[in-house]
Length: 215
Length: 180
Image: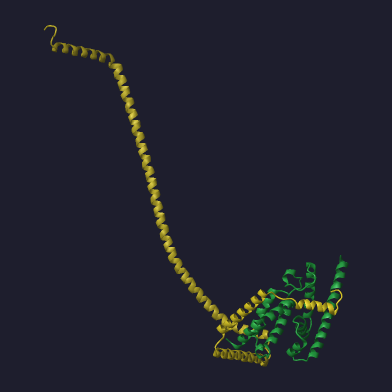
């Protein structure tokens, strides 16, 4: 609208007046508004408080208002506030003088109780711990002793075996030397003895056996 | 069912279509008009003032006008898409013509929103709802001459508002060109 005149305004207004919604849109909008109206009424009925509750609410509101008014009046009519720092210092000193010893005593007794209970618990715990420790040490000692004795036994047996072995070797050597000596001294005699013995035995056999050729 | 609700349901049946058409003209959006229509009837149902009014129809119309212009104020001014509008009567069928007309209508509505309540109401009743002077006078409790004078003054005010808008926009345009 570069140049505003009444005709243009009237044209524009006329165009606006000719804007018409569709029939479907009208029906939809009316239905939606009706539904909303009914739903709103339903909510209102469902939530409407009974009359005595309404009265109660009013009374409560009035009471709150009166309390508020009383509070404000009290605040307004109250005397000027004291010097806060002085009041704080006085309160602090009086509280210190009256409360500190009592608090200290209470703290000490509480600490004593706590220590006692803690020590009693610790005592029992230490006893258990000690018993466990002794049992563990004894077991360990027994195991070590057994192991040591086993080792010593093995050692002794080994020594015995070695001694026996040495004795056997010595015996064999002696036997060998004895055989050598006998062989050197009686070797020929033995051979002669063996030959004679053989002969003798041969003679006896021939004498005893029947002569087959004679028959 | 409460009597208020009964009255409102009757009003909805009798004047629902007119109210919806009015809301559509003022918002230029059917979906928004539908929302506002629902809001309007819920407000009327919950309003204490509506129970005391003699003419519920007039009260509803005034409330609808206020609701629509409240919505317009709450919206950031944007140029809506052409297809969002119901088909306005236009001598030019081209998309550009539609766009120009819709822009003019938006401007006009925004300007109407800036007028005083009484002027706005008279303008809407006379020019958007096409009601007669006598009818408006009856509804507003004034004489026909007074209504004519009111309408004339409202148009003058509207022209002033549109003129000042035009002036502002042209200044802005010059500023933009100078900055380029």
